[in-house]
Length: 277
Image 1 (cartoon, rainbow, N blue to C red):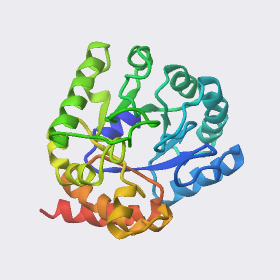
Image 2 (spheres, rainbow, N blue to C red):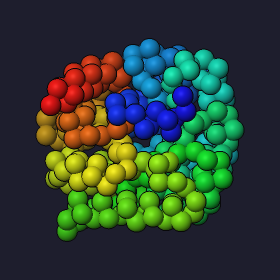
Image 3 (cartoon, one colour):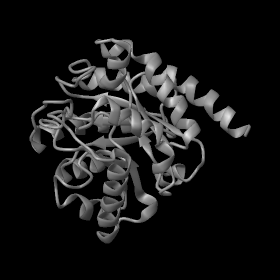
Image 4 (cartoon, rainbow, N blue to C red):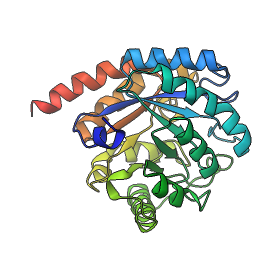
């Protein structure tokens, strides 16, 4: 089964986060070697992840850009190893906004692209995705990772984020990317205040109603820590599980998480409840 075929099936999927970076906000430096990254990916697949999202550039607030060459050096060997090691039902995505990195990852075995810039960072991204006939995730972000938390502001965050994503999907379509190959992501925590994240979470159905598959990446995000007065991201597992449960009931298709086993339980129970409607 291809990723696009799996995307058409009704049951949601879990995407396990694999940061092969030294500076990611929650797990930077833990999986920088090929062996460590492979072990973690296999553990996530064993816990129920159907997608492993490999990233070679941190997008935490305040982070600096990483050159394409460095990203490729980080991700390509890991993706090669994962393609050999992961079970056949497990897919690989490349978390990058640079077409050069994305294409090298596809050559190494990645199945689709997860672009936090929604194609804005690199004008060649959409053409490359269309040519390689892979799927792409388009995410909303106000500003850049370096600047996104410097006083973000919205009049109507749900309408503005939804409108942005539909506009980027239209641009992607004009570049030759089929509608069924486009996934939308409201970008929880990317250039948003706590109230903005809460409003987006409360209106996930507005994004599901676009007809595009929706990805939710709320795992260990700071807005939940602010609610709970918890500063350590690894202590936000239960909070993340709550967002997964809510997302399943709203119709979200993909959940990008750090803690796969716990979120697999939440997904399965919420899915069973949703099916009993």
